[in-house]
Amino acid sequence: MKLSNYPHLVQKGILAEMETSNLFLMSFVSKNMKKLIKSSQIKRFKSISRIVYYYDITPKGMVYISVKPIFHCTGRWTRVAKANEFILKMVECKEDAENDHFVLNIAGKLINFKICKKGYEDYCPVASFLPINKVSVIESIHNCLLNFFGDSIEYYWVAEDDKLFIPRLKNLSVCLRIRIGNLDKVWSTLPSSLVLKQIIGWMDNPFKPESNFYQTESISLNLNSKRLLEVLSYFQGRQAILTCSYSFEIRGLTEFVNRWKSGEAFQKLEYLEVLTSFGTDYEFRQTQILNAIGVKQIDERKTPPSHTVPRICGWRYFRPKTDPISSHTYVVRETDNRVASISIQQTTILFGVWNETEEEFLALVK
Image: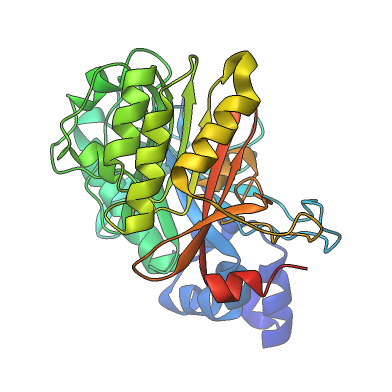
């Protein structure tokens, strides 16, 4: 079947029914075919929120697209669109290609491919290469994806534990997941200039206040009480979920909030969640904290607005937004009159920063 024999509208309809991985392969047929795919699938490509590389985490390195979620408007996060779609696999081989491979010119480099015909990635193209060519092949594939999908899409490289091969690629953000060992041990192996998009794991030993660790945009960490206070003191990113098995000093939280209120620190912060324990004197400690940070109150008879922001790397749990904060207590930043909602429960402290000034925030109260 020659696609060019059909009217343009029919061509577009055929391409729209094809998997993205097949469109990617078809783009190598000719320059005109690539141009047709890109021009006819503009809306489809705009629905892609990110492209994710899981190179060392799965048995075979996977590259997939993550589609922007579509939800019913009932207020419940009900997914009605396909979340992820595999584009290709990347596999290191010890020997040259077998007979069932074909060769494609990927951004100036000849790479062996075959089609996977089993598993949940049916008919997904597989790029194979010798270990010595790993860096150059991945760079070529990335440049080809950039050219095909564009640079307005987010590109993520997910690294895990001791498998810390992290290529230096254009427009690439890095997410680090630590399942075994301590964050400080893994961090010592990373380039000092590297700033990560997200870190998930455990932290035992302290970092210097000037460490790039504190510039990570999103962190989700298990900490002891001392490390928790340090992160609250030096964090410069946007979102943090901090878990501490033990109760920590009230002073740490009050200092954090008061520094935010003064405009001295945490200028980029959007969302903070601290999971801890206040013990049996929860209500007493809650009152202590609220008094110490000088909160303002919304009339209990009224309904406060609900704070939520898009999660950084939120595709992992299909929870695209942070947990909502609907609280009658809030604080105001002195430098720009911005508001942060604060909620203190028995095991959780939530702190959400609004883009609105106090006047605009109060206008949202019902």
